[in-house]
Length: 174
Image 1 (cartoon, one colour):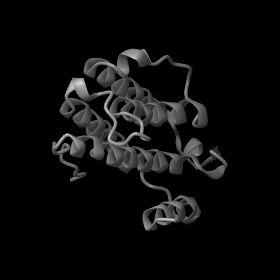
Image 2: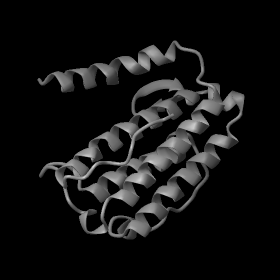
Image 3: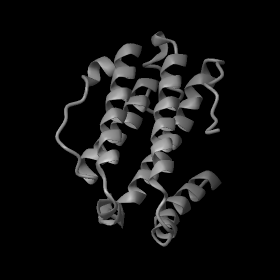
Image 4: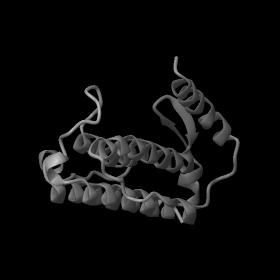
């Protein structure tokens, strides 16, 4: 196995165990993290020429639009299915996969929904245990896992920019 794969596996296995023993990440920090995730994905959507939305950095990877969709849809899916948000409908995925406007509408829809779920959580709900794909953790921790996933997916999309000789949008939380 390549070193990067081993490190990723170790992180995926050890991070939930380490975080479950840590104290809660303050809600105001996590709200900033949600806003940052949205900002990064929207900047990437704005920076990629529309003609390249369906281009792949490598033959086996998702194309740019599919990767963007996966990133935003995961935020929505975990907020609704794992965190038990209210029923909602998302913008049409075929539009999200084929136009910049549709992609940005989908990203904003996913993050508007997640933000609503997040803001409705009280202290009891945040402390409750849930199951995130087979790993038990407090609900508050799921928001950190969503953040990690989004940033990881955004990092993968950098390859799409590099393939085209383009610089990706700047990446800074500060």
